[in-house]
Length: 83
Image (cartoon, rainbow, N blue to C red; front, top):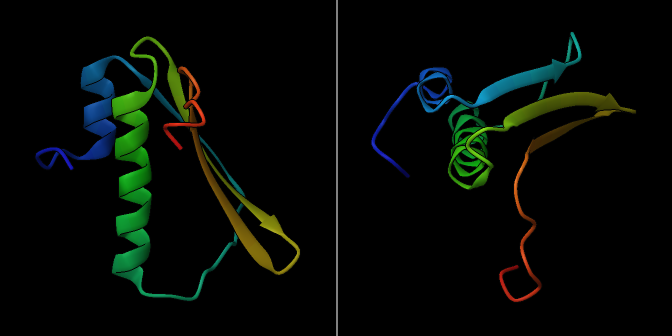
């Protein structure tokens, strides 16, 4: 990971848009710090590998009794070799 930077500030300073689409009232069971770490890694990767003039979208949706988190950015897709 890069040197610590509050992610919203990092997106702002890089000129990238950070958007969110989050359903209300979603709760998740688990280790709070581990969940935070995973989300930060996903956002950090999106910041590094998305088109600098693009945007990154974070979605958190309710799907039955589960929560679905996605982080997507504009940029080139990975090749099969890179996956």
